[in-house]
Image (cartoon, rainbow, N blue to C red; front, side):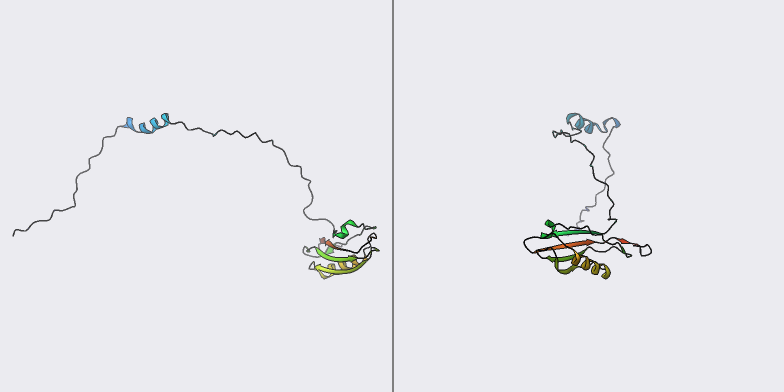
Amino acid sequence: MAAVKQPSFRWTEPPRWLPLSADGLGAAFGQFMQTNFFASHPPDFRPVPELSTPTLPVEPSLAQNSTMQIEGELAQRQLPTQISLPNWPYADVLVPCVVQVLVDTAGNVVSTVLLTPSGYDAADQRALELARALCFTPSSRLAFGRIIFSWHTVSPTASP
Protein backbone atom coordinates (compact mmCIF):
# COMPACT_ATOMS: atom_id res chain seq x y z
CA MET A 1 0.00 0.00 0.00
CA ALA A 2 1.25 3.43 -0.82
CA ALA A 3 2.01 5.86 1.99
CA VAL A 4 -0.54 8.63 2.38
CA LYS A 5 0.79 11.95 3.52
CA GLN A 6 -1.34 13.60 6.21
CA PRO A 7 -2.40 17.15 5.34
CA SER A 8 -0.85 19.93 7.42
CA PHE A 9 -3.21 22.16 9.36
CA ARG A 10 -0.63 24.92 9.67
CA TRP A 11 -1.85 27.10 6.94
CA THR A 12 -0.37 30.51 6.35
CA GLU A 13 -1.36 33.10 3.84
CA PRO A 14 0.03 36.56 3.36
CA PRO A 15 -2.14 39.24 5.05
CA ARG A 16 -4.67 41.05 2.90
CA TRP A 17 -5.56 44.36 4.52
CA LEU A 18 -9.06 45.78 4.15
CA PRO A 19 -9.13 49.04 2.32
CA LEU A 20 -9.73 51.98 4.74
CA SER A 21 -10.01 55.52 3.60
CA ALA A 22 -9.23 58.47 5.91
CA ASP A 23 -12.63 60.01 5.07
CA GLY A 24 -14.47 57.06 6.63
CA LEU A 25 -12.71 57.21 10.00
CA GLY A 26 -15.21 58.13 12.69
CA ALA A 27 -18.15 58.24 10.27
CA ALA A 28 -20.10 55.57 12.17
CA PHE A 29 -19.52 57.41 15.47
CA GLY A 30 -20.58 60.73 13.94
CA GLN A 31 -23.78 59.16 12.64
CA PHE A 32 -24.49 57.62 16.06
CA MET A 33 -24.05 61.00 17.79
CA GLN A 34 -26.40 62.72 15.31
CA THR A 35 -29.19 60.20 15.78
CA ASN A 36 -28.98 59.93 19.61
CA PHE A 37 -29.50 62.84 22.02
CA PHE A 38 -27.84 62.80 25.44
CA ALA A 39 -29.04 65.37 27.98
CA SER A 40 -26.20 67.16 29.70
CA HIS A 41 -28.09 67.42 33.02
CA PRO A 42 -31.16 65.48 34.13
CA PRO A 43 -34.12 67.71 34.99
CA ASP A 44 -34.32 68.55 38.70
CA PHE A 45 -37.76 69.45 40.02
CA ARG A 46 -36.74 69.94 43.67
CA PRO A 47 -36.91 73.46 45.06
CA VAL A 48 -33.69 75.39 45.38
CA PRO A 49 -32.36 75.09 48.95
CA GLU A 50 -32.14 78.21 51.05
CA LEU A 51 -28.56 78.76 52.10
CA SER A 52 -27.79 80.09 55.54
CA THR A 53 -24.83 80.42 57.83
CA PRO A 54 -25.04 78.51 61.10
CA THR A 55 -24.93 80.66 64.19
CA LEU A 56 -22.93 78.78 66.76
CA PRO A 57 -21.54 80.42 69.85
CA VAL A 58 -17.78 80.36 69.96
CA GLU A 59 -16.78 78.80 73.26
CA PRO A 60 -13.49 77.42 74.46
CA SER A 61 -13.19 73.67 73.96
CA LEU A 62 -12.25 73.03 77.59
CA ALA A 63 -13.66 74.78 80.65
CA GLN A 64 -11.45 77.44 82.19
CA ASN A 65 -12.60 76.63 85.75
CA SER A 66 -13.76 73.57 87.65
CA THR A 67 -17.51 72.99 87.48
CA MET A 68 -20.12 71.06 89.43
CA GLN A 69 -23.33 69.59 87.97
CA ILE A 70 -26.18 68.11 90.00
CA GLU A 71 -28.34 65.34 88.50
CA GLY A 72 -31.30 63.23 89.59
CA GLU A 73 -33.91 64.23 92.18
CA LEU A 74 -31.49 66.76 93.67
CA ALA A 75 -31.58 68.86 90.51
CA GLN A 76 -35.03 70.12 91.64
CA ARG A 77 -33.69 71.32 95.00
CA GLN A 78 -31.80 74.59 95.30
CA LEU A 79 -28.42 75.27 96.90
CA PRO A 80 -28.66 78.39 99.09
CA THR A 81 -24.98 79.28 98.62
CA GLN A 82 -22.66 79.26 95.63
CA ILE A 83 -19.63 76.97 95.88
CA SER A 84 -16.16 77.85 94.67
CA LEU A 85 -14.27 74.90 93.23
CA PRO A 86 -10.46 74.74 93.05
CA ASN A 87 -8.35 74.20 89.95
CA TRP A 88 -5.84 71.39 90.39
CA PRO A 89 -2.10 71.57 89.64
CA TYR A 90 -1.84 68.40 87.58
CA ALA A 91 0.02 67.58 84.36
CA ASP A 92 -2.89 65.75 82.68
CA VAL A 93 -6.65 66.08 82.16
CA LEU A 94 -8.80 64.57 84.90
CA VAL A 95 -11.87 62.41 84.32
CA PRO A 96 -15.05 63.93 85.77
CA CYS A 97 -15.50 62.73 89.36
CA VAL A 98 -19.01 61.39 90.11
CA VAL A 99 -20.30 61.32 93.69
CA GLN A 100 -23.68 59.83 94.67
CA VAL A 101 -25.34 61.56 97.60
CA LEU A 102 -28.39 61.01 99.81
CA VAL A 103 -30.03 64.15 101.20
CA ASP A 104 -32.48 64.12 104.12
CA THR A 105 -35.66 66.18 104.46
CA ALA A 106 -33.79 69.03 106.20
CA GLY A 107 -31.48 69.36 103.16
CA ASN A 108 -28.36 67.90 104.79
CA VAL A 109 -26.19 65.38 102.97
CA VAL A 110 -26.42 62.10 104.89
CA SER A 111 -24.32 59.80 102.69
CA THR A 112 -21.68 60.18 99.96
CA VAL A 113 -20.30 57.46 97.70
CA LEU A 114 -17.58 57.95 95.09
CA LEU A 115 -18.94 56.31 91.91
CA THR A 116 -16.32 57.39 89.37
CA PRO A 117 -12.85 58.50 90.52
CA SER A 118 -11.06 61.23 88.60
CA GLY A 119 -7.66 59.54 88.69
CA TYR A 120 -6.20 62.03 91.19
CA ASP A 121 -6.74 61.06 94.85
CA ALA A 122 -6.59 64.62 96.21
CA ALA A 123 -9.32 65.74 93.80
CA ASP A 124 -11.49 62.72 94.69
CA GLN A 125 -11.16 63.41 98.43
CA ARG A 126 -11.99 67.10 97.88
CA ALA A 127 -15.08 66.09 95.87
CA LEU A 128 -16.28 63.91 98.76
CA GLU A 129 -15.62 66.74 101.27
CA LEU A 130 -17.48 69.29 99.14
CA ALA A 131 -20.42 66.91 98.62
CA ARG A 132 -20.68 66.25 102.39
CA ALA A 133 -20.66 70.01 103.11
CA LEU A 134 -23.50 70.84 100.71
CA CYS A 135 -26.81 71.98 102.18
CA PHE A 136 -29.93 71.89 100.01
CA THR A 137 -33.32 73.47 100.55
CA PRO A 138 -35.62 71.39 102.79
CA SER A 139 -38.14 69.02 101.24
CA SER A 140 -40.80 66.58 102.42
CA ARG A 141 -38.83 63.48 101.33
CA LEU A 142 -35.35 61.99 101.01
CA ALA A 143 -33.59 62.50 97.69
CA PHE A 144 -30.83 60.67 95.85
CA GLY A 145 -28.70 62.37 93.27
CA ARG A 146 -25.36 62.50 91.56
CA ILE A 147 -22.90 65.37 91.70
CA ILE A 148 -20.41 65.52 88.84
CA PHE A 149 -17.22 67.45 89.49
CA SER A 150 -15.41 68.38 86.27
CA TRP A 151 -12.00 69.45 87.49
CA HIS A 152 -9.94 72.00 85.60
CA THR A 153 -6.19 71.38 85.73
CA VAL A 154 -3.37 73.87 85.50
CA SER A 155 0.31 73.31 84.89
CA PRO A 156 2.05 72.05 88.07
CA THR A 157 4.53 74.93 87.82
CA ALA A 158 1.70 77.50 87.88
CA SER A 159 -0.02 78.38 91.16
CA PRO A 160 -3.66 77.15 91.56
